[in-house]
Image 1 (spheres, one colour):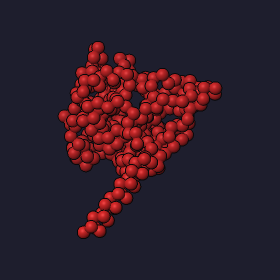
Image 2: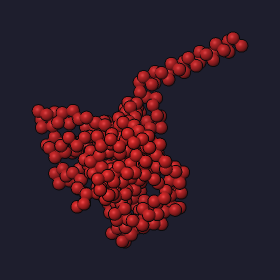
Image 3: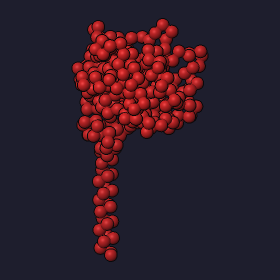
Image 4: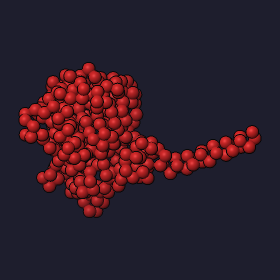
Length: 311
């Protein structure tokens, strides 16, 4: 009996020591994330600090002031998880038309499917075509051009309490609801727009953000966006990290102040106007719903680098 107890204690001590060593190396954090990311060592270092954004409960009114200063992460978003599986979602909404859908591939190039499939395609047809053309696809659809779809899913998600009234303050009532569905390693290149939020109902998504102080139209900013594309886009950050900007002596901005966050199902990323951001989805069927403030005259277009969409 004494021998068995000592043996068990020794085994536990060894296991504990191995686990502590792994934690200190930053490689034992969220193993599922590391497998999806590709390079476990570098992804482990990224996952060791899962989110740089301030965290609040989705019902916490203190989040309102923080979200006017920079991105925040809201937890505890009350949205039913089970009904958003791909199988359940397609059973309910796969036949709904998508009048102006588009997908983006890993180069950030939009591919409109209307011409190939007629004026409308169904949600199921759209995703089938997008997947057939290649992985890394990202689907967006918007309430401004697809009201029937958003009316159909309207009862299946709710506004986070902290956001419900805040984005309508000061008479800013023009909101565009958005739905996104992404394949594993689908990415959205750097871009900026008005205040917005996105809640995940399925999958996981990495975010990288920079403040509005960053000048994308400067020589250094354009060079940085070009290097991001050459490197393979935002999902390559999981392997290589974001490309280093040129130093000020060479026309760049020097060190960039990154904020990054791994968003999980039931969490909401909320950020103010003009924050630059890029994303990478880690799972098949990474799905989110959110809103974005619309300018009265329409949204500003994505940044251009030498005449090319820099997303």
